[in-house]
Image (cartoon, rainbow over all chains, first blue to last red; front, side, top):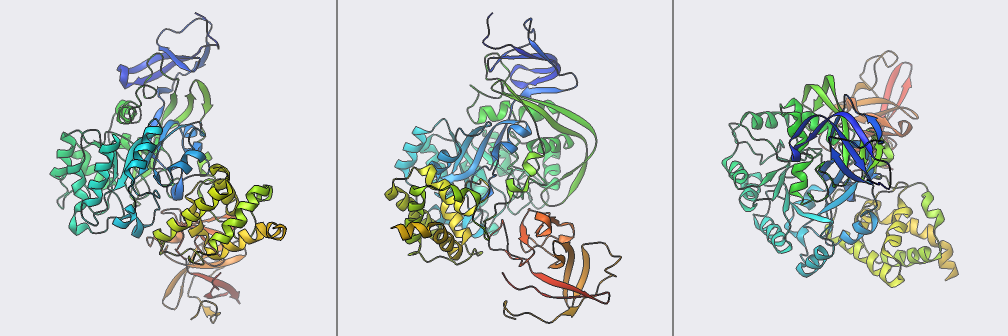
Length: 501
Length: 112
């Protein structure tokens, strides 16, 4: 057999691949970016000693944030560098911002990035009084949705929305109806931001969801949880599971409670999927990484092979990715995660401050991504520049010093157009969604009239206000910056442009 | 008091600042505050995060001691004026602190 590059064999590791019923010591060979096989390895292969390590298909995290108000400046820091070879942006963009997401991120991370679009056109804003409002669904352009999903079906893996127990069950039915039209599963948030718990409309999602749909934040400890007042799992939850609805963890910054998890496990209710919901507001704790969430499940008593199944085979099936991820079968892309299971005393916190002592901790060592070996670096994501989305107030960001004439001309026209808009002078808690949409529309109108490529126009605005490379909805960014600084900064940057004009 | 007016210096009820652990728990009248060793000396903040009222005794100083991070959800505030950095709309109450003859005094910091 001739190979275009030398095969690499990981020798003597503990291989866990639920798709092949493997759970024991074995050798895994990769070559030319593919899995060559598990078992016999070819002569002359480069050997990596994997004794004492576990080897599984590359982990898949169905719920992370790489874009928008929750996203990271360095998205791979929560991907390949933490043992995750594929992940899904859960709701950052909606139909109004998906093209921006695609320009800025699609195909631009080493980690395979997919997206679950948000039902609200702007995507997740992350402000409580905005998220639950029926008016936040201000535009459901079915024809545009159909065109977008047809064009990017490989990228778009589910439709996300929130069951916020507000405004009746209508928004849930709108979401499910649109997902049926688009032939996508729904992915529904049942966690924080429950606004009218007494109405209990959040529970309607268990009735609306069908086989293959996913409900996330299963063990959250907020209002409208899975347990009744006596701590029993609500029948509506169990009935959904019977019908084939999939339950996901989505640990998050607000949505994992040890007492809820322990009571659910005692009654036999486990999640089908384990995901992190990593975002700016939980990466330095309590979530840290998907590996940490997996360790939580070891503490809850789930066998290691089952934990691995819930971050490999199960999400691959749920996301229709079985042709490319979640298995070590020969011929599959060589996406592998190599990890240790450390023994000791480890504190595992939930999102409400409760802690448990675990005796095992999962620590990723390296990944292979399409056959390329990459060492994990669990601390990389902790860099403040990765998670503090900070506006440069007192100086012009470095990137803005490299603007060329077309960018400056665009900014000058953007300033003139924004000068006609009345929006708050500084960021305030009453984020006005309609104003965000107006600012967003102004950006696109000016960008189109200047014939500036979308990516260049977006980067120009980001570089005007941000030092680090966050990607966020432009309207949201301008609202966060505030009218005073936005107009002053654009004025400073384009002073000479105005004089030249 | 309007935010652009400087208040009176008020003595703090607190342990001996020379030997106490920081952040130091103190009281200014009815207001409980925490005193941190920040970039430019001592700085006081309200005891609880304005987001979900988490106690800030385990808050972390960032960016050379110019910012404070709430341990619960990573909400970051500028110690100069309490402005929220990554959580628009929230504001942390901050206090100027000075020491006179071993006694700590505080007054509300000016809004940015």
